[in-house]
Length: 432
Image 1 (tube, one colour):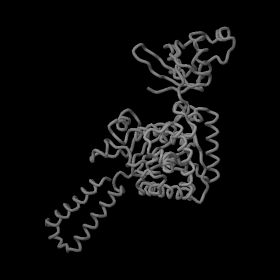
Image 2 (cartoon, rainbow, N blue to C red; image 1 turned 45 degrees about the horizontal axis):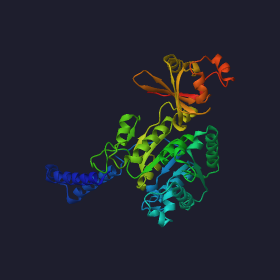
Image 3 (cartoon, rainbow, N blue to C red; image 1 turned 180 degrees about the vertical axis):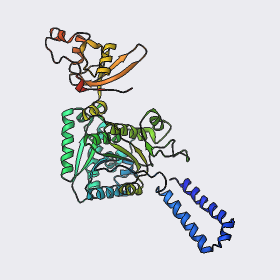
Image 4 (tube, helix red, strand yellow; image 1 turned 120 degrees about the vertical axis):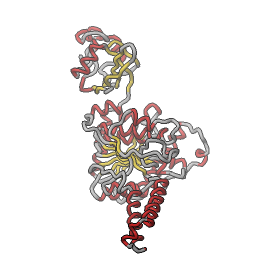
């Protein structure tokens, strides 16, 4: 509720009182000054409940057992002087309350670079820092960040540093999943961050909103809570338009929702709200409800503890994507693509078949066996990605066997890895 809305409510209360004061109702009932005071108290109470969100935009969130909470650098180091308790104290209190009630929390925390920067005045003055400098700051800041969080809790905390490379590898992905589950079994708070000290640009997740979504799916969380510095998703920029309205519930993430978060003139959208919508899309596809809340307001957490909510609630899909297919669709990155003919397109879409070499007409990119590639159909006017999957052949091999029958592969290559280029169990169809 904005200050303007609060002011309007106060003005409305005054108007109601003046109407009552000048009406015959008061005279007929011969209400005394004390009765008038009582009326104003009731009106004030109603206004308070509205302002606090109890009578307006009150949303009941589903029960949950396991949550991933994402906290950004602006909440960790709001003044740019290292880790601060200004906002994290309320977040820690929320974690403690839920831990004491038997719920499981995984914390995805930014702030390592900001924490490290506070110890290095010479680097703080630089506007363009080199990659080694940024990685060194992250290395310095990781321990400071862990200390900052650990001081709040009387139960163990564990640091987990992930990279996109680790998430792309199915075996390492499963190992990370098992580690998280074991830490939660041990009543420990996992604190996750991207491993900026070793990650190169092309293997970075890039932002902790999307990292939090990956972690939520990895850990099979019930809910993803993304903390930011505004109340949620609005129909316009609330920092420029005082009449902008909060969108309390999002049933489906589509182009219209992305348009609200992708306005390049909107300071909250660049690397801000858009990445939160991207993260929510990944989470809800995995059957995880997503909340975007104002992490600067302690009452945001009080409401969740009471079973209500003020912010933007993005509902999970009614039919979640299976775990492996979700990994294929949202986690592992494409290394190339194959263009297929109409016959292959039809059997993939209508029969759920595997992709055979006979249906492949063109290969683009350089990739190895086990890489994720897009399956594309071109109708001359445009290209449509219809599926994504794990290839059983590298790009060089595919160029040799494209358009050939499976029975011809061994005679062409001298060996047969698989009859299929991409097996249907290693493929996910893309809805367009």
